[in-house]
Length: 391
Image (cartoon, rainbow, N blue to C red; front, top):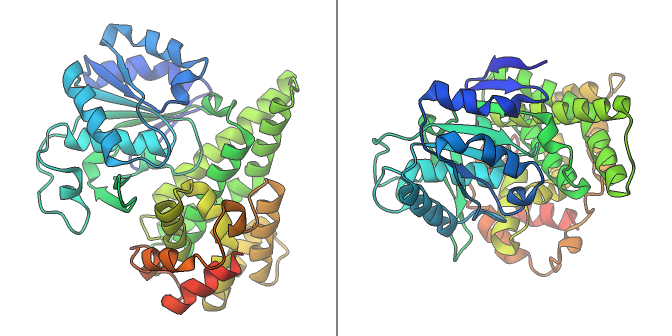
């Protein structure tokens, strides 16, 4: 069964939702579509079928996305958009293709450099039409498919910049768990920890937003129920296991749970994020670390730092994953146990970060825009302590 809900974009969720793509393009009046994806997704067995299904829309594919997305990828995509004469975008993939697709849509009709439109520091207004986007997520991590912003790095400095506008929100999300069934265990784990970090930090962020708080708590529950199962299914497939129909159905159910948790994290963090993301953004900037993996490694240390400032909130989260919990410390212990059980590296050393290499990380992290909403204020010495704890 395919379900429909709106928060605020229209979401069609369920196995087979991808098959509604042509009908949704017709509804939006799109006549010439550009598919935007990354190099890996473009090689998946089901991708040519998707391209063929859009032949009547003059579909062309731009797959020049990989790693942490940078401006040059966006610029190449804009050239592909113009050369194709496209009037709509289908974004297929994880957070990187989603963000590049939104940046291409922004620059399709706006002049200048992408960073001229940086949120909070823009030198140009976003006042031109932004073409419609339909999003098909293939990972459960960033939830960028339900977000109003795009995060793109500078090619040279790797500094991340955020461009924000409500018009960047995709018109429709086709959230199909079947598109995640072949996701490798390591990517499943890293993207899942990204979703979990969004949910936790949104719940802890300063400010009043009970709507986001409720969504965050339910999302944490979905991660607790489904992430380990998704990683286990992925590992069994890698080892050559074949699933009977009951096991395959359980796999689809778990992937669907994580798809929803991912979207809920992206919705909830409009309330704000925190110090985990500032530390992770620095790792991506300095060491080009995958964002979800960076979050996963930093989350336990960041939460140990935060526990003293928000014990009641930690207890609420602990009771989501362990109803009999009596102390918020149990939630931190649960995070550590989950990370270890799904193969997230336990220290920064596993990334090749030297113990004496913290200065550039702290220099980037302290300038990051996420930690001001952290429940516990973070100054320079605190960043050093959190990174050291992550060793």
